[in-house]
Length: 367
Image (cartoon, rainbow, N blue to C red; front, side):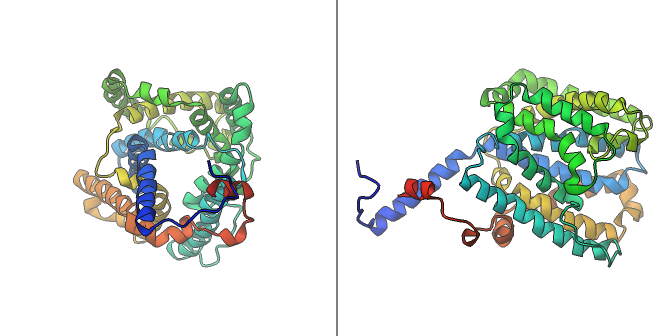
């Protein structure tokens, strides 16, 4: 076996090509079609939910569907994010990827959305505030916090009960400010921690045939309950961004709703994941670009809202609402495609080697 300091002859061009092909094959093989499918379908639901927002007041059915989707789409996405954060150990290489893949896009899109919404919201004086996440950037701020705390959740004895207790206490604390949208980061924390606690066999369990057969009836019941609840419940609870007091509810509602929503969202997320195809589909490759679709589709939504598209008469018809839903899905799909990824990779996944010290351990392994 060659030592680390031993000289090595450069590979022949054919050998280099073969090695590169092997690395590419391993990279493709390492990606699980199931999770790419799940991320893509979840991000499509996010875009559809945003398209439904202006249509809620005029339709009880749209509002019911909106409530059901908001009950599980971000929880499912966050659970998957937690699952893939299990290996985060604050090593230099992982810290670098956290900065370049989360912190830098947060700063760039926070500034970009500020300038863009000065135009769409007719607020030319809107200040740039890196501590007050604007629109969709809250997820990046929360993901940064969650991932940094991963080593803690990996060593405490009861991580999920502790995360639920923190989320419940957050709903009882109206004094939590808007800095980094901490209220939402704390209230969504249990889903991330749940993802950290999951193992491959748990996902295999929800993908069993029996669970798939139950998923349809469960979703149907959820829609019926949501339709009943529309005039009786404040759906802002599903946003997880305000305290119970700010929702004009008694303080004790916060912990109760935390547990109730967690149970509801987890069941619906499990049903959603049970219906996700496990094989390669035409959209599987788009799962690698869901963060692109998530952050970029907000500009389309904001621009469309500026022109009050929801005031058009045909949009208020059932067929019009279906068209709007399909258009939202098509737009976010286009924004997840490889050409868009290549165009915006310099922002979403910058190399930035110049900003970091070289990791001697990584260098030794590469040699």
